Image (cartoon, rainbow, N blue to C red; front, top):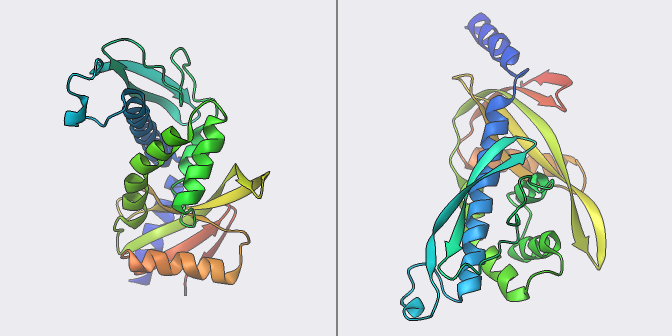
Length: 241
């Protein structure tokens, strides 16, 4: 039994050399979030939410979408940019003629980290936008993406992961009127089928024992019962006892 387990772990360890599945997952998470932000921007522009009767006879309305390909460091992402009938909508998160993500990926992905409050995410969005948008629109965008963040953070996981390893995402946040660097630690995994997953992302001031205990408890609460190997920074590995 032990030999079979060791052989499975050995085979799956080879898969860790290619993280295409993880990159694709993060790209899709980025794309879906950008899409929700664009929808919130349109709601703010029109002054009413999609399908809200308040928009009847308002003088302007949604008018479909334009397809757009955005280059990210995780690959190309296809997004649908909303249009308004009067042709006045000017997207802000990724501007009309931009075709690259402008290194937004880490900023967007970091919002999915445990430890980011609604206020933190709103401040985070304000920093991403800068001074170009109103406080009302930042609030609208935050309200739009919070359900996505909560659902992703709480999604159920498999019982067993042969290999789990850690990575860090560095991003800038505003704290007490200063811009500071923070790290969000992502837990990546290879499941029994050999597929890679991002199990979660956590904000941690320090990599203390209590911090990792909190991470482990969160994974356990979402269904994880056993991890065979945990690798830190992809360099060292320790067999779970």
